[in-house]
Length: 475
Ligand SMILES: [Zn+2]
Image (cartoon, protein in one colour):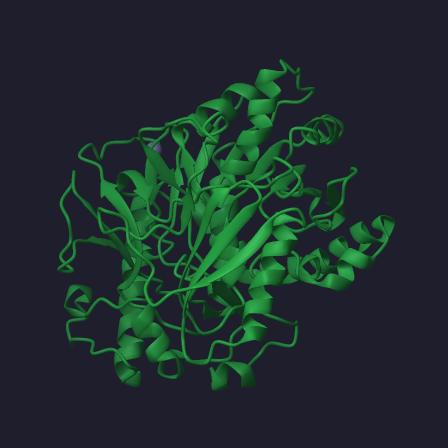
């Protein structure tokens, strides 16, 4: 980590989302009328970083090329990438014929152990992956790799006819106002991108009507965010038979598993298609839903292999883990990086939409759940609690009673009370003041009977808002 610190970019701290100041306590203290200015000012600076020359080139290539053209360009760039790394004799053992299947598969723990060796050039941007094991990983990106990610975002939005500059409503875990705020507005405008950021942390039954009013006023053509948040809005709209005064062109759900019942409810309430989007902070693997409802691996984003436990590529109809190579990111080259999300390669590979490569049936993995607060708010994505927490080997959040949440931690030797404080503050800012937060330190977090690790253990019956679902999609 030493080298990364030296290279910390001038534009500030490690970012994981669109707005930095929302994470800053100072931002909360500002009077509301100043917040849009701060958010917009920050977004204006970010806009220049995101939408530069690489963005423009890659975005126009994606719009104007066929999937075959994208695949051959990917192959060409992958070979160039592997041969550059081979010449540099960097970390990996790359065979002379550049056969990627001969290169060992690595995972997060190997990357953490060899961090300094992998770090190659001054990063343009640093992303931070939390994961559900509570072990954070900072990923440095080159300018090209960073802007390429945004080109793919907008490429996916083009499937629904959405272009930059149109009205966007975002409800994706940004802390736009303090969690203890009782009265609306629960949103803040980002004028730089014509975007209304909604809080994901104030979605109580009492507040939902204000959200709907704000949406009706704003009339977004595009909504994106956590399926758990958008679902709560959809459920409220249908239950109360509310007439929406707008019809979005598309809704994109990401960052969590989009459950089938959520997708159905969202499409029904908003009268438009809910597209699933899968990506990850490491930018290793990118899967997007096409207008025909198929989930396609995007071949020019990164080179994706789907491998079994022995590291062999699976056949259509079989499940495996995503092991991907981002051949654009020379700042921190990840080759055959196992992201540990599971997909099933479809038996049926035919889709003539022309908007992506191989088809998968679903992506499953870190299936998030909700914690319910005494005020009745449902809060998901609690892996964020551990984003800035060092020396946590593994973590789990459990709820047995509505007024209490247990944060279970396997700690490393250097774990301290200051780190506990960081986690505590993060938990408070999301769960509010009413719930008791209990820390439970254990030698080993118990696994499920099927041997799987569960990050959220929810023992309460909150099925009235979380009906059973048979299949899941991770996005
Ligand atoms: Zn398709």
